[in-house]
Image 1 (cartoon, rainbow, N blue to C red):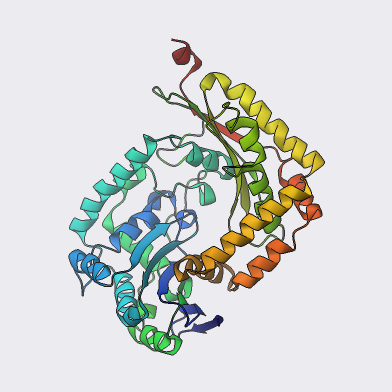
Image 2 (cartoon, rainbow, N blue to C red):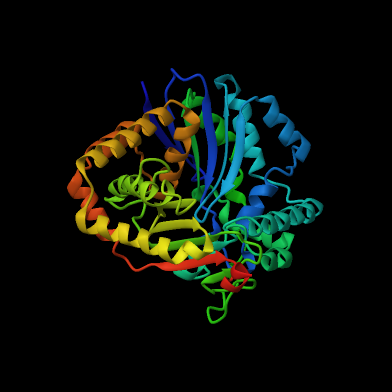
Length: 418
């Protein structure tokens, strides 16, 4: 049977584990309260940059050693950075638990070598350039910057070309020592985990973490000016774009909101890839390539996104159709049949995801880092099954009637006509 255990080490590091000895694998990872919203203008992009540097060697391991050992363990490993956290994770056979804990823990004491820093700076700059060359050409970043402002949740996860070029290894070290403190981390584990041994290993291997120096706070941002490389125009002119990419954002539920589950169901009814209202109205009819909506939940706020991709000449009419459909849903609600289908999809997805410890890891770790709360698979299933037409109607009225911020990435009308 599945059971949940938690423990706080003497240095303040929190450990949270969803344990099921019937599983054939174990997933583990460090969840760090270090994301784009925690950065200053001079630090923009450092959370993501640091994620890269964690794989570039420690005092005990070279970069080649880190990657070789991850391969030797035979599981899946990776890392990601978001607006609110950075996560380092892997899935292995239970017999490799000690080796994985040792490797992940060592990685979180990076050498931050100057030469590796300069090499990785080029990689980050290439990543930024590549991303800006691909649809929707930075429209999601721009709409977040306008809606939230270019700082906090609106700050770009990758940073900008200007911020990455201007940063240095000393700034990265200071940021690391300020954010990567044990009291700001959670070690999460799911699956076939030996919890007692895990605690003993972590207590021993992270014993010195509380001794990390605490740098002076960074210089406050000049709130009267925009960060370097940032513009707040609502239109991104893309010379060679064959289609138009329209992104809208408005208020949505946070991770703590009581109606977040009903809002997820509403988004499924409206914007799922197949069988949703927007699919039948705009995609199946050939009007648009993409027409969808979804909620994005953050710790203290949330956003409701709309995304439309179509021919530039059809953007205005399709956008109008999309908005009319959303307003009609807010006024009239959804049908019992639509609710049942969406609930079936959501519960089936929960059950199938719960079969893999690697899938459960992110839910367990993120929620424990953010709120110190545990939500089991049964809790999720009960939340979805309890949703009725009234709850969905309430969510529709709460979020579909909100005024939105819009960004369009497209070639100009003149270019299209020529």
